[in-house]
Image (cartoon, rainbow, N blue to C red):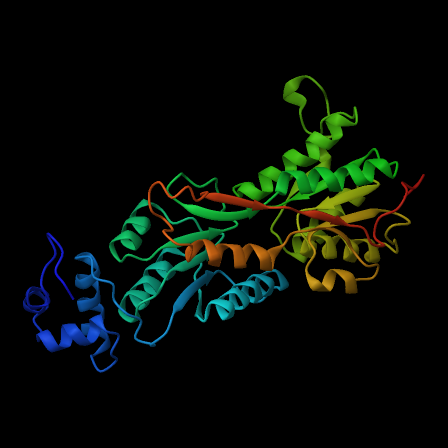
Length: 348
């Protein structure tokens, strides 16, 4: 490989690493007959000096970093990534990463074996992690970023604000006026956007903006709840909402898992959707159509989000300055109306 200005020769790297030039050449070309620890040390030096280290697996490899695989939501993201990789003739290495320590462990492995890039879900690397990725020359795209990413980070999301506005508007058109929302964790960008969409729909309909006492209009703050994106979180908050002296007639859930929890809470009281309470979810995971009743929900194109992120990662000139490539792409959501929503009841 020709030497670039300011880049060490293979002999120089070999001397720095305390190995032979042959060992450095093997790592550079993706050979596996070098001890893992030595390979990682050599690969880091090569990447530091601008060399492109081949994957030791012998073909294109992309890493998908995700906190858990045990949800329908995660399965859809995995499906989209694998389909896009298959089309490109690449392979996907999946790692569960849910902490800074987990990220460091993954990066050490990826640096040792080589990777063509990383897709990370709901995880926005901090400045030190971004520096390590840059030093290792590993391009990155964030799927569903937890915070609004800066201009130097490419990401893919969905129209969370519009999705929740459409869901709330659907309930208003059915005659509901006391509409609750169970949002996700406040620190998530998507959670805040969905709550803003809910409020915007109420305001556009001339209803009081829930929870804005500070603005001098005493909206029903008790109708705004937050919890984890899981069935237990939805059930916990729905129990409290149903126990209010004046319960809501409809609930917008932060995701489908929460909506399933709302349906469970209704069943505990001998109530049903939509006769006693209308319920809307968010995601449209495959099991949403299997629920009883089938769930009205906002379809978030999860598989398409992952596939789009993969293609951004491999776009010609991706990550380079002046390419004109957008740093953040939002895919459209759509409301899927099923059996869990109906006209507002007179009495719960």
